[in-house]
Image 1 (cartoon, each protein chain N blue to C red):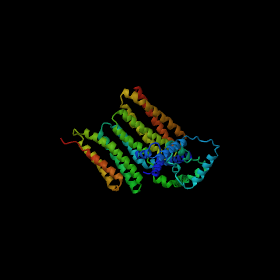
Image 2 (cartoon, chains in turn green, brown):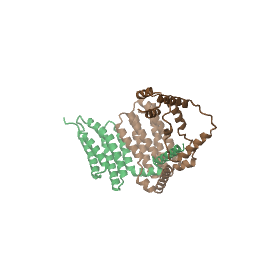
Image 3 (tube, rainbow over the protein chains, first blue to last red):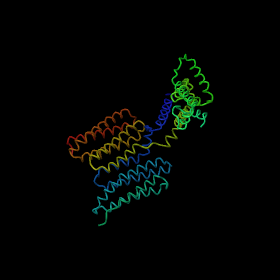
Image 4 (tube, each protein chain N blue to C red):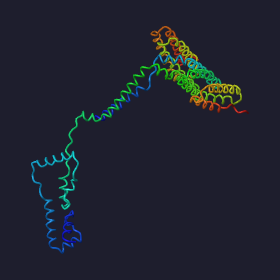
Length: 168
Length: 285
């Protein structure tokens, strides 16, 4: 009986210790710091989300909204890299990857279908190439061994597969 | 087979009445051995049927005392060896039962002694406890190192990224309204948190909130048909109403700088709520 109680107590202590290491809620001061740091990208994202909502059926324009988002993310990622803040590089890269994989890839596919009749074909190529060039510029300055770079390279490969409309 | 070896064989049998053919042949031709065999069979049955004499328990205690003394030392002989193999089975079982070692009840060990025996377990538990406490204390002593080096990820940024992706993946106007209302809620929540700690950032949040409600949410709501408006919009109008009240309440409590931004948020929420109400009632284009 005593042995069981001792074991139970030990497990309870360990659980408490491990639980205490778990999710820490962010304090308002930490939130304020994070907002200060991320304000440029947050403002850009909100601006471009509003812009996207205004052209729900113009996929090309919606794809184009990603260009400035990508530029801002690149700036922040490079700044974090210069400051050796790998956690921030990883966080921003993960968000960028999500944006490109889940948002841009689908929008770009829809844009490709939209210009299949030939109109705005040149616009499509220009938008797509501009976005890919921006991703390439970011990849050039990232550490070769960084996992973030590898994930972005995968994303670039996916975007490259969304080729323009076939020539008639 | 001579008489002596035959008698030895009979003594070794578990049941002296069950003899082999060679033994039976010797018995048939040897009168002295026949007489000896009869006596042996009678003795076997007589021993098994002897009643146990009444006892005052003294002998039992003496025997038990002997066992207790012998328990600490090395056993000198196997108990079975003292039972004659010449006895019949029933008699030997009875004898075996009597001579089997009696295990006296173990004396109860005090709790303190039992706990003392578990000292290795106690040592491990103590070491873990001390380790955990030390780790906690060290962490609390170095908040700048640990908290800043491993900064938490920004939930606001995550929500805004999600809003952009979800909006671009939305296929209907109702889906877009839903995403935009959620984005407005996220901005309002951020403003609510930051209003007391960083008035400098409040203007940025107020501008974003106004932009989302006036330039995105309301126009998207207008794109819905009458049925969609009646089904979809009431809950968003209600949320805007709640945001308006909350922002006004916070504006009264917040430091200078935050109050103006919060009033702007409240005003944007009020205007959005009124627009949505008009759309629900079919009074707006």
